[in-house]
Image (cartoon, rainbow, N blue to C red; front, side):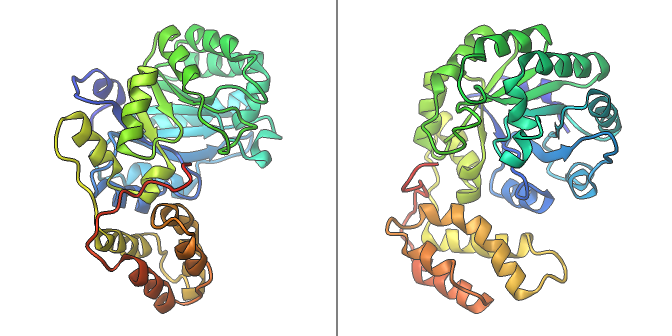
Amino acid sequence: MKPLDGMLSEEREGPFLALAPMQDITDLPFMTLVNEYGGPDVFYTEYFRVHSTSILDRPILKSIVENRSGKPIVAQLIGNDIPALIRTAKLLEAHPIAAVDLNLGCPAPVVYRKCAGGGLLADPPRVERILGGLREAIDCPFTVKTRIGFENTDSYDELLEIFNRCEIDLLTVHGRTVKEGYRSEVHYEFIEQAVARLKCPVVANGNVYSVAQSRKVVQETGAAGLMVGRGAIRNPWLFRQIREEFGGQTVFMPTGRDVMEYIGRLFEAVRPSGLGEFEQIRKMKKYMNFIGAGIEPTGGFLYAVRRVHTVADFFSVCREYLDHCETMPLIPFVPN
């Protein structure tokens, strides 16, 4: 397995590609399936919740120790207790990780109200104490995933200086504030600022949902890499497509039947042993909220699939909309 720093230094025709850490999504089964469609250059785990009495979450740890993709995997932490974060990072260093990443971007109110994730961005001095403590304590590469501010971007310049002073090895920037969630346009100019000012490589995150958008984001920001989240749920071929685009190759376009096959494989991959039919259908609707946004513009597919309760009805709706040989861009009709 190649270390993260080694992959960053390689000559490549396009940007470094990462699968974003998405809670309750990027578990081992999903990572394994996405990798079979081309996959990213590096995976990030769901975040390990860290506090004074926390232990390593076993399902998340499984995505590290049972990673058979040959791709490096970064372990992400979320929390604000410096001794606990250091303790957890040292435990993770005993496992085959490429880096430890600190989450400074989660926009969920249940997280930021506890001054964790994106909530820390409201307190830059505390961010520096946490980053400094982790940088001094751990031996492996240390990375950060951030947003551009909490309520506004007033502290963004200060945060960039903190990232430089703490000598992090890579910064991923989601170009929205925490309070903007996923609703606003992505402010790529702030990612461009990070590229210009930081000593480490910068990865751009936010609305990387198509080949054309990936080209636009790289051109506008100069980022060394792209992190893809919800776009990879909708279109597992996206990493392959981006490589083909930057490599000057013909870009693969899936047909409706290809998408239907992917949904079937996803259905089986993320189904835990013993999970009942109704519970699995409910679980699949979480993924279909993303996939359906790129299938047809009226919302008819999503309306229908959200109302099914049986496996037979679920796949009947999929066949109705996807049993064809026409190519599908899988670009969201409302970009997100």
